[in-house]
Length: 571
Image (tube, rainbow, N blue to C red):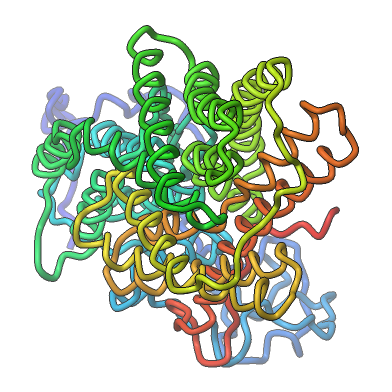
């Protein structure tokens, strides 16, 4: 009911509280009503639009004349899910997602972290599985700069220790993902490490880098870093916070080398003496070669203490063994073979570790790092050549009778040569500062390598380069399997084992030919040395890749193939 209006005396003005400040006062022209006063459905057709009734007869359509209809002339209500009348459906192309779905990749923790992370690095970014937070954190999450800094410090120790670029990238990727940073892209070159993290597609990336200025060989430290990475990436048995990881990393850097300096000097002598026995030397040759190698090692230490580059250190270390071999020739001793003494000294200097790492980086697609490492090997080799040639030229001027045709390896001492090869490998392992628990395994691996080489090259008459490649392949195969069994790096099981295969004698006779103006014969022998060195490096890498044929691909469905390394096929 509506109350009756009173007279004029009853119509009192309203107070400010009784009317809105936005209402125009009486007597002012009223504006047109707002569209908000007449709400319509967002699914209704605009006024004046006519549709085909057959197109609106499906589910969701209706009729009426209320607010839900269109304008005048529209008698039916169309659904937003019904295509327009002028649209004709065409056969659609095959969907990107198959009907059975995309198999989800699960990187199980049973596989070593090296294989898991290498598999992810070889995946396209959009196919990588979502990260699984391995290390626990609070609600605020880990500080991104600290995680990136820890990742770079770990990568620095690995790269400085001689690890391959692909394994360094895998380690950095594993550490960053374990602390929750999934959008990370590590990059490794010879002396520079960098990592970039992008929180999301709309956030700015955070990038950090670190330069590797000092590199040293310490496989004990390398194994400790691998154990830290394994603990960080596997949380079933241990939890490693950022503070704990920093503490353990500082302890790894502060730890002293397992062997003192005098032990390394004795190991260099044992390596040279054992190598001289491999090429036909006796007891006296063993002693002279060991003395020359130890003198060269002390001379190299003296140069290093004065801040001289490694080029001059190798030059200085190569001079004493060559000088002792020439001195034996000048004494006209017939029982001592000077070539065996000089060859033994070269075995202790040839950079087999850097050569294997450089070729491995090149085969896996890291060409910048591979080129830098191979250039470093070339400089070291030139330093050795300079030291030996200087002594050989001096010996020729003094009348030393050096015989370039004395390329002999007696076949009637197989047991002695096998023992010498194992002693050489043992001394090489000490020089590399390996853990005592790995010395026995790598010593046996080196003995097996020499047995294979001797059986193929000496007994079977096969090309020495081919025999070296096969023996190095077995070294790489066994080393990779042992490293996966121990969840550590493969370098401690491979590098020292290739010591007996190094081309020491071919290098010496090539330099001797150049020193005696027999350039053609000298260059041919040097080419043989280079081919042998490349056979060692390629054989080691091939053996490592063959070992992965026996391992299950992490996260792959049945029948899936392993992704190759960075592959361009030359295009």
